[in-house]
Image 1 (tube, rainbow, N blue to C red):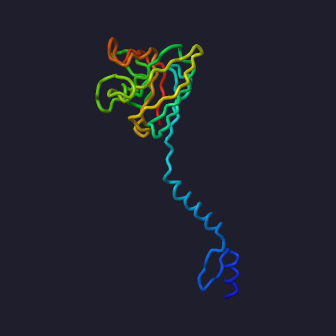
Image 2: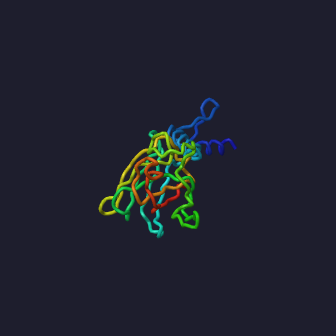
Image 3: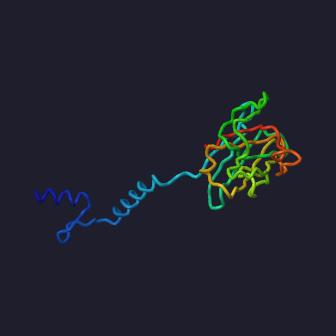
Length: 196
């Protein structure tokens, strides 16, 4: 029986020393440590990233916006196309719904997204990273090819806070004020994507 135990110990990489069993190879310990660390950490690591496809009223793909949380807040990587040339208001809206809604019998494209995200109820459209709507984002400017490629940060929000909200692209620009037109004067909603 003792020979069988000795044989097993040698095959497993153990040596008998002063009546105690010790690991023979440091590599084995390192591999075991790495493996256990990976198993333990795998449940703790969460992806702080969301990819949001934007679609037009006609349900055509307009590109994607990638949101990545980091030390500066949430980074927005915008890669859009088929956008009318010029300035466009761009906002986080309160609901993750891109369906139309009706107000006084009039259809509102992407009205299911609600209004600008304003959890502090400031009721002020002041522009990005100010003391107004948390949903206010920088203006997007489409080039002559109808493309928008830009990057910006939103520093007073987290990605987790944005899940279940939507991104809305407006037909017109945004003056970051409620005069002469409300909500920056962006007008019609021409693109929508849900943040998941």
